[in-house]
Structures are given as structure tokens and as C-alpha cells.
Amino acid sequence: MSDKKRYVDFLKKRTGENFYHVLKQFYEHLKHEWAGEDKKAEDFEKDGCKIVLVLDNASIHKT
Image (cartoon, rainbow, N blue to C red; front, side, top):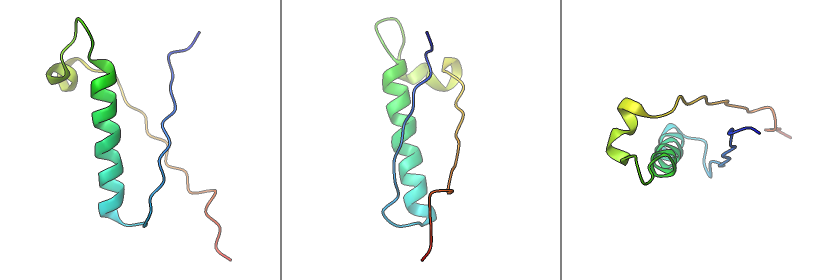
């Protein structure tokens, strides 16, 4: 059994601002998923999980 999860989001426009917005949403999602009955979202930065991001643009094709 694995506890790995996959989160996929696509950028409507490929700009740094949109990328940052998606990363912030992902971070907030992780914080709230991590927090539970015995954990507080405020403690996520200190006690939270390790995050690995894989950035893949291999599926972007220009015609």
C-alpha cells in the first residue's frame, strides 16, 4: 500500500503568475489534507510532509 497521491492542474495561460497561483492552491490543499484530528494546519510548515514536484512539459506540442 502506498500513501503517494497525484495532483494535476493545468495552467490556462503559461505565465509565472498563473504557475505561482497553482502552486499556492496545491500547498493549501496539502495543508488541509495533512491537518486532522491530532494535527493543526498552522503546524504544517514545521511538522508537515516532504513535497516533491515533478514539472513535465513533455505533453506540450507546438504545431
